Image (cartoon, rainbow, N blue to C red; front, side, top):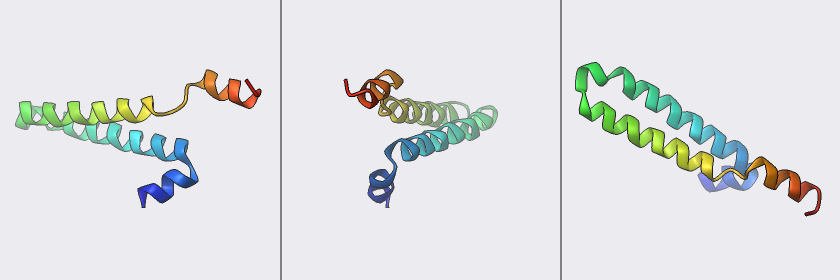
Amino acid sequence: MLESLLGQDVDGTLEWLAGEARRWASLHERWVPVTGDIARLWRKRAEAAEALLLSCLPAEEEVVAHAAGN
């Protein structure tokens, strides 16, 4: 399914997945007072996943240069 979504709209799919990771980071943050380090671990993993997904998006300059034929 992910392969199909990525094939149809790479940027949209990566942004959606990054948003899901961000949402989960927020949910894990809420559990820090209860579970402490466990919630922090999962929050950090979700934040790392978000950063990785966003790093896969082309930089705006690359998109503009490509559109201009450079």
